[in-house]
Image (tube, rainbow, N blue to C red; front, side, top):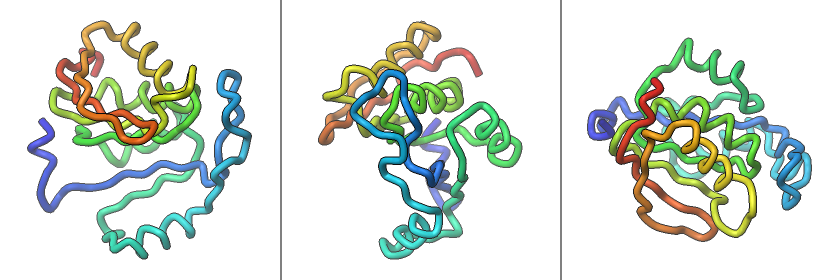
Length: 158
């Protein structure tokens, strides 16, 4: 459960292409390369905001089965909180393909760009739920264009 993930062993895992957003076949709100920031900029921003970098693992690369497969070889944990700020449908679908089956009741998922876009993160979650009908979530709150959900039933696909 998420309660077991609290304490001194709590880690933050971040993923970023460091090349901005990829091209999307569905989302036209974003351009290829939008929001580009290199890894050094991200690390400096984390330091500037008082974060302990010894508790943060940043993985550079495009969201893909290969990226997450390599990550899984070194870091396998049950996620307490998954924040998805992938903007595009394709990227969010890759994130849900990896993290979705690892979510447990009590896990919290934050979608940064859930509202106001016809496709993107909302469509990726809808398609995930079709593939995993045992998965169920409860809406917690809305923040800006984002939405927070608590997992109430796991997908059964781990």
